[in-house]
Length: 289
Image (cartoon, rainbow, N blue to C red; front, top):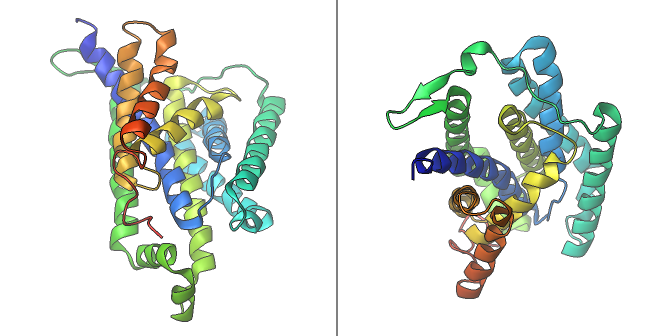
Protein backbone atom coordinates (compact mmCIF):
# COMPACT_ATOMS: atom_id res chain seq x y z
CA UNK A 1 0.00 0.00 0.00
CA UNK A 2 2.90 2.35 0.64
CA UNK A 3 3.80 2.09 -3.08
CA UNK A 4 0.26 2.81 -4.28
CA UNK A 5 0.39 6.64 -4.51
CA UNK A 6 3.60 6.59 -6.55
CA UNK A 7 2.27 3.76 -8.70
CA UNK A 8 -0.91 5.69 -9.46
CA UNK A 9 1.12 8.75 -10.43
CA UNK A 10 3.37 6.65 -12.66
CA UNK A 11 0.24 5.23 -14.31
CA UNK A 12 -1.07 8.75 -14.85
CA UNK A 13 2.16 9.85 -16.55
CA UNK A 14 2.26 6.78 -18.77
CA UNK A 15 -1.43 7.17 -19.56
CA UNK A 16 -0.96 10.80 -20.55
CA UNK A 17 1.86 9.79 -22.90
CA UNK A 18 -0.53 7.29 -24.52
CA UNK A 19 -3.18 10.01 -24.72
CA UNK A 20 -0.81 12.35 -26.54
CA UNK A 21 0.04 9.72 -29.15
CA UNK A 22 -3.56 8.50 -29.44
CA UNK A 23 -4.83 12.05 -30.09
CA UNK A 24 -2.73 12.23 -33.24
CA UNK A 25 -3.98 8.82 -34.36
CA UNK A 26 -7.57 9.83 -33.66
CA UNK A 27 -7.63 13.11 -35.57
CA UNK A 28 -5.79 11.59 -38.56
CA UNK A 29 -8.19 8.68 -38.73
CA UNK A 30 -11.16 11.01 -38.32
CA UNK A 31 -10.22 13.36 -41.13
CA UNK A 32 -8.42 11.01 -43.52
CA UNK A 33 -9.73 7.57 -42.57
CA UNK A 34 -6.07 6.54 -42.58
CA UNK A 35 -4.93 3.66 -40.36
CA UNK A 36 -1.48 5.08 -39.67
CA UNK A 37 1.03 2.55 -38.35
CA UNK A 38 3.77 5.10 -39.10
CA UNK A 39 2.63 7.18 -36.14
CA UNK A 40 5.17 5.44 -33.91
CA UNK A 41 7.85 6.55 -36.38
CA UNK A 42 6.73 10.15 -35.85
CA UNK A 43 7.21 9.62 -32.11
CA UNK A 44 10.73 8.25 -32.69
CA UNK A 45 11.76 11.06 -35.02
CA UNK A 46 10.56 13.61 -32.48
CA UNK A 47 12.46 11.80 -29.72
CA UNK A 48 15.74 11.75 -31.64
CA UNK A 49 15.45 15.30 -32.99
CA UNK A 50 14.74 16.46 -29.45
CA UNK A 51 17.72 14.46 -28.20
CA UNK A 52 20.18 15.97 -30.69
CA UNK A 53 18.94 19.53 -30.21
CA UNK A 54 18.85 19.12 -26.42
CA UNK A 55 22.46 17.93 -26.34
CA UNK A 56 23.61 21.07 -28.18
CA UNK A 57 21.10 23.80 -27.33
CA UNK A 58 19.13 22.61 -24.30
CA UNK A 59 15.82 20.92 -23.61
CA UNK A 60 13.44 23.87 -24.29
CA UNK A 61 14.72 24.22 -27.86
CA UNK A 62 14.62 20.45 -28.24
CA UNK A 63 10.91 20.48 -27.38
CA UNK A 64 10.35 23.21 -29.99
CA UNK A 65 12.41 21.62 -32.75
CA UNK A 66 10.90 18.12 -32.45
CA UNK A 67 7.28 18.87 -33.47
CA UNK A 68 8.41 21.23 -36.24
CA UNK A 69 10.73 18.60 -37.73
CA UNK A 70 8.09 15.87 -37.56
CA UNK A 71 5.41 18.14 -39.07
CA UNK A 72 7.72 18.87 -42.03
CA UNK A 73 8.45 15.16 -42.44
CA UNK A 74 4.70 14.39 -42.30
CA UNK A 75 3.89 16.96 -45.01
CA UNK A 76 6.61 15.56 -47.30
CA UNK A 77 5.36 12.03 -46.66
CA UNK A 78 1.78 13.08 -47.36
CA UNK A 79 2.60 14.76 -50.67
CA UNK A 80 5.05 12.10 -51.85
CA UNK A 81 3.20 8.94 -50.92
CA UNK A 82 0.35 8.66 -48.45
CA UNK A 83 -2.36 10.73 -50.14
CA UNK A 84 -2.48 8.02 -52.81
CA UNK A 85 -3.69 5.61 -50.13
CA UNK A 86 -6.44 7.68 -48.47
CA UNK A 87 -9.14 5.99 -50.53
CA UNK A 88 -7.58 2.53 -50.45
CA UNK A 89 -8.75 -0.28 -48.19
CA UNK A 90 -7.37 -0.48 -44.61
CA UNK A 91 -5.11 -3.43 -45.49
CA UNK A 92 -3.18 -1.36 -48.04
CA UNK A 93 -2.93 1.53 -45.56
CA UNK A 94 -1.60 -0.73 -42.82
CA UNK A 95 0.98 -2.30 -45.12
CA UNK A 96 2.34 1.00 -46.50
CA UNK A 97 2.44 2.79 -43.14
CA UNK A 98 3.96 -0.24 -41.42
CA UNK A 99 6.62 -0.32 -44.13
CA UNK A 100 7.35 3.37 -43.56
CA UNK A 101 7.68 2.72 -39.83
CA UNK A 102 10.21 -0.07 -40.44
CA UNK A 103 12.26 2.10 -42.81
CA UNK A 104 12.34 4.96 -40.28
CA UNK A 105 13.20 2.63 -37.41
CA UNK A 106 16.10 0.97 -39.22
CA UNK A 107 17.36 4.32 -40.56
CA UNK A 108 17.50 5.67 -37.01
CA UNK A 109 19.26 2.49 -35.91
CA UNK A 110 21.93 3.05 -38.58
CA UNK A 111 22.40 6.67 -37.53
CA UNK A 112 22.22 6.36 -33.74
CA UNK A 113 22.90 2.58 -33.30
CA UNK A 114 20.61 0.51 -31.11
CA UNK A 115 21.94 1.92 -27.86
CA UNK A 116 19.42 3.36 -25.44
CA UNK A 117 20.01 7.10 -25.14
CA UNK A 118 19.01 9.49 -22.37
CA UNK A 119 18.29 13.20 -22.39
CA UNK A 120 20.40 15.76 -20.55
CA UNK A 121 17.81 17.79 -18.64
CA UNK A 122 18.48 20.98 -16.61
CA UNK A 123 19.49 20.38 -13.00
CA UNK A 124 16.42 22.19 -11.66
CA UNK A 125 14.20 19.65 -13.42
CA UNK A 126 16.01 16.79 -11.67
CA UNK A 127 14.53 17.81 -8.33
CA UNK A 128 11.40 16.36 -6.76
CA UNK A 129 8.12 17.99 -5.83
CA UNK A 130 6.54 17.48 -2.41
CA UNK A 131 2.94 16.38 -2.88
CA UNK A 132 2.36 15.82 0.83
CA UNK A 133 1.92 12.06 0.59
CA UNK A 134 5.02 11.49 -1.55
CA UNK A 135 7.95 13.13 -3.32
CA UNK A 136 7.59 13.05 -7.08
CA UNK A 137 10.04 14.08 -9.84
CA UNK A 138 9.48 17.65 -10.99
CA UNK A 139 9.93 16.87 -14.68
CA UNK A 140 7.21 14.23 -14.59
CA UNK A 141 4.79 16.73 -13.07
CA UNK A 142 5.63 19.31 -15.75
CA UNK A 143 5.21 16.67 -18.47
CA UNK A 144 1.76 15.77 -17.12
CA UNK A 145 0.71 19.42 -17.08
CA UNK A 146 2.03 19.89 -20.61
CA UNK A 147 -0.05 16.99 -21.96
CA UNK A 148 -3.18 18.36 -20.26
CA UNK A 149 -2.56 21.73 -21.94
CA UNK A 150 -1.98 19.93 -25.26
CA UNK A 151 -5.29 18.04 -24.95
CA UNK A 152 -7.29 21.24 -24.50
CA UNK A 153 -5.31 23.06 -27.20
CA UNK A 154 -6.16 20.36 -29.76
CA UNK A 155 -9.80 20.33 -28.63
CA UNK A 156 -9.98 24.13 -28.97
CA UNK A 157 -8.48 24.00 -32.47
CA UNK A 158 -11.01 21.42 -33.64
CA UNK A 159 -14.09 22.78 -31.90
CA UNK A 160 -13.60 26.54 -31.69
CA UNK A 161 -11.70 27.72 -34.77
CA UNK A 162 -12.83 28.38 -38.33
CA UNK A 163 -10.26 25.95 -39.65
CA UNK A 164 -11.52 23.33 -37.22
CA UNK A 165 -15.00 23.92 -38.65
CA UNK A 166 -13.72 23.09 -42.15
CA UNK A 167 -12.09 19.97 -40.74
CA UNK A 168 -15.28 18.78 -39.03
CA UNK A 169 -17.38 19.60 -42.09
CA UNK A 170 -14.90 17.79 -44.34
CA UNK A 171 -15.22 14.69 -42.19
CA UNK A 172 -18.99 14.65 -42.75
CA UNK A 173 -19.24 15.64 -46.42
CA UNK A 174 -16.03 16.45 -48.32
CA UNK A 175 -17.84 17.14 -51.61
CA UNK A 176 -20.18 19.72 -50.10
CA UNK A 177 -17.29 21.56 -48.42
CA UNK A 178 -15.43 21.73 -51.73
CA UNK A 179 -18.53 23.08 -53.50
CA UNK A 180 -18.77 25.79 -50.85
CA UNK A 181 -15.17 26.82 -51.45
CA UNK A 182 -13.46 24.92 -48.63
CA UNK A 183 -10.02 23.48 -49.35
CA UNK A 184 -10.41 19.93 -48.03
CA UNK A 185 -7.12 18.73 -49.52
CA UNK A 186 -5.24 21.49 -47.70
CA UNK A 187 -7.14 20.74 -44.49
CA UNK A 188 -6.19 17.06 -44.80
CA UNK A 189 -2.50 17.96 -45.10
CA UNK A 190 -2.72 20.29 -42.10
CA UNK A 191 -4.40 17.58 -40.00
CA UNK A 192 -1.77 15.00 -40.97
CA UNK A 193 1.01 17.46 -40.10
CA UNK A 194 -0.72 18.30 -36.82
CA UNK A 195 -1.02 14.62 -35.90
CA UNK A 196 2.67 14.14 -36.65
CA UNK A 197 3.67 17.25 -34.71
CA UNK A 198 1.74 16.03 -31.65
CA UNK A 199 3.50 12.65 -31.80
CA UNK A 200 6.88 14.36 -32.22
CA UNK A 201 6.27 16.66 -29.27
CA UNK A 202 5.19 13.77 -27.07
CA UNK A 203 8.25 11.81 -28.20
CA UNK A 204 10.60 14.61 -27.19
CA UNK A 205 8.69 15.27 -23.97
CA UNK A 206 8.38 11.66 -22.82
CA UNK A 207 11.91 10.53 -23.67
CA UNK A 208 13.59 12.20 -20.66
CA UNK A 209 11.36 9.88 -18.59
CA UNK A 210 11.48 6.67 -20.62
CA UNK A 211 14.72 7.23 -22.62
CA UNK A 212 14.85 6.50 -26.33
CA UNK A 213 16.01 3.76 -28.69
CA UNK A 214 14.94 2.72 -32.22
CA UNK A 215 12.26 0.37 -30.86
CA UNK A 216 10.58 3.01 -28.70
CA UNK A 217 8.04 3.97 -31.37
CA UNK A 218 6.49 0.51 -31.49
CA UNK A 219 6.65 0.27 -27.71
CA UNK A 220 4.25 3.21 -27.47
CA UNK A 221 2.35 2.72 -30.73
CA UNK A 222 0.72 -0.65 -29.99
CA UNK A 223 -0.75 0.40 -26.60
CA UNK A 224 -1.93 3.62 -28.25
CA UNK A 225 -3.96 1.61 -30.77
CA UNK A 226 -5.39 -0.33 -27.83
CA UNK A 227 -6.29 3.05 -26.29
CA UNK A 228 -8.34 4.22 -29.27
CA UNK A 229 -10.08 0.85 -29.58
CA UNK A 230 -11.05 0.92 -25.90
CA UNK A 231 -12.10 4.57 -25.99
CA UNK A 232 -13.93 4.29 -29.31
CA UNK A 233 -12.35 4.59 -32.73
CA UNK A 234 -12.39 8.26 -33.65
CA UNK A 235 -13.59 9.57 -30.29
CA UNK A 236 -11.53 12.50 -29.00
CA UNK A 237 -12.52 12.13 -25.34
CA UNK A 238 -12.52 8.37 -25.75
CA UNK A 239 -8.80 8.58 -26.55
CA UNK A 240 -8.27 10.59 -23.37
CA UNK A 241 -10.24 8.20 -21.17
CA UNK A 242 -8.74 5.11 -22.83
CA UNK A 243 -5.19 6.40 -22.42
CA UNK A 244 -5.60 7.10 -18.73
CA UNK A 245 -7.27 3.72 -18.19
CA UNK A 246 -4.53 1.80 -20.02
CA UNK A 247 -1.76 3.67 -18.20
CA UNK A 248 -3.24 2.97 -14.78
CA UNK A 249 -3.96 -0.67 -15.59
CA UNK A 250 -0.37 -1.25 -16.65
CA UNK A 251 1.05 0.56 -13.67
CA UNK A 252 -1.17 -1.11 -11.05
CA UNK A 253 -0.58 -4.55 -12.53
CA UNK A 254 3.18 -4.16 -12.00
CA UNK A 255 2.52 -4.27 -8.24
CA UNK A 256 1.28 -7.83 -8.69
CA UNK A 257 3.27 -9.11 -11.68
CA UNK A 258 5.42 -6.98 -13.98
CA UNK A 259 5.15 -9.32 -17.01
CA UNK A 260 1.35 -9.28 -16.71
CA UNK A 261 1.30 -5.51 -17.24
CA UNK A 262 1.83 -6.08 -20.96
CA UNK A 263 -1.08 -8.52 -21.09
CA UNK A 264 -3.74 -6.82 -18.99
CA UNK A 265 -4.45 -4.06 -21.51
CA UNK A 266 -5.34 -6.61 -24.21
CA UNK A 267 -7.60 -8.42 -21.77
CA UNK A 268 -9.28 -5.08 -21.00
CA UNK A 269 -9.68 -4.38 -24.72
CA UNK A 270 -11.27 -7.78 -25.29
CA UNK A 271 -13.72 -7.22 -22.43
CA UNK A 272 -14.69 -3.76 -23.69
CA UNK A 273 -15.23 -5.05 -27.25
CA UNK A 274 -17.42 -7.90 -25.99
CA UNK A 275 -19.56 -5.57 -23.88
CA UNK A 276 -19.50 -2.51 -26.15
CA UNK A 277 -18.08 -3.19 -29.64
CA UNK A 278 -17.95 0.53 -30.52
CA UNK A 279 -15.73 1.29 -27.50
CA UNK A 280 -16.49 3.10 -24.25
CA UNK A 281 -17.42 6.36 -25.95
CA UNK A 282 -18.49 4.98 -29.30
CA UNK A 283 -17.79 7.06 -32.36
CA UNK A 284 -17.88 10.77 -31.62
CA UNK A 285 -19.93 13.36 -33.50
CA UNK A 286 -16.64 14.82 -34.64
CA UNK A 287 -15.64 11.68 -36.49
CA UNK A 288 -18.95 10.18 -37.62
CA UNK A 289 -19.20 10.30 -41.40
